[in-house]
Amino acid sequence: MIGFAQIFAALEAADPGNPANLPMAQALSTIECSAMFPPPGCNPLLANQQFQVLPPFVDFPNSVEDGKSDDSDTTWTARIAFDLSDDVNLYASASTGFNLSNAGEETRFGFEFDGTFYPNENWLLTLAATWLDPEYVSFVGALGPTGPTDLSGETPAGVHELSLVTSATYTTEFDNGMEGFFRVEYLHESDVQVVDNVPKSVASREVGLLNASVGLSTESGWDFMLWGRNLTDDEYLLSAFPSVFQLGSLSGYPNAPTTYGLTIRKDF
Image 1 (cartoon, rainbow, N blue to C red):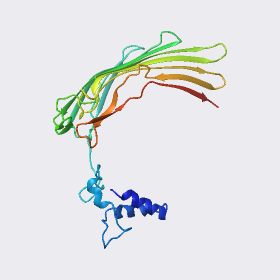
Image 2: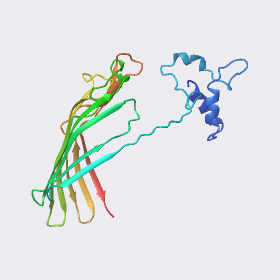
Image 3: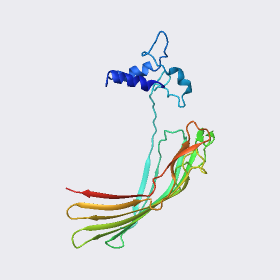
Image 4: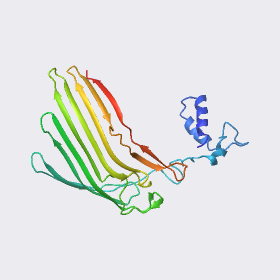
């Protein structure tokens, strides 16, 4: 509410920390100044509320909303696993979930792989990959790029069809008791629309990150690690949205740029 901050600040200045200051400021900020209610028992800025760029939110709970909700659903998960050998495990799973959003029904079908390989005592190689085929089975009244729309049968935004991460780690021990390692990691996520209400042509996300680190540990408990993230300087949007009070404009949050750092740690 316009004028609330000034009223609350004045009450705090007169009586710091009084728990009654907040409800008092909330009450006074709704009273327009007049001969019956002169300052300071009113809000001198209330007449300018019509010019606010961002109007105030309705207090919650209020006269038509009690602030309570009652939602429930029964969900289930089923999983079967089989050890094909000492090194290979196969499994299949199915589950349901509860969506508290407006989507009536959404399905996700996919495959997943997670592998670890030790070529020798020094090297560790990993690969994890997920392929998903999501779909809004029913989503009437969804918020699309041009307003409310029916996204039934469409692919949900923000869900990458293919995601994979692979890494290679080399560790070694030196004659003086120190241990060292080198690690490189690559993350890939296929192109996807960031959010449902911003067109993919404007806000899409395809990720290709390369991270690396090298470290050294001493017998005395010192750890040193030099690391770099996003060495490919990949650029993409984490999220996007229609700009506030700027019809036709869009805004987004970019990912972190290439970053380097040194971590030093001591165990006592």
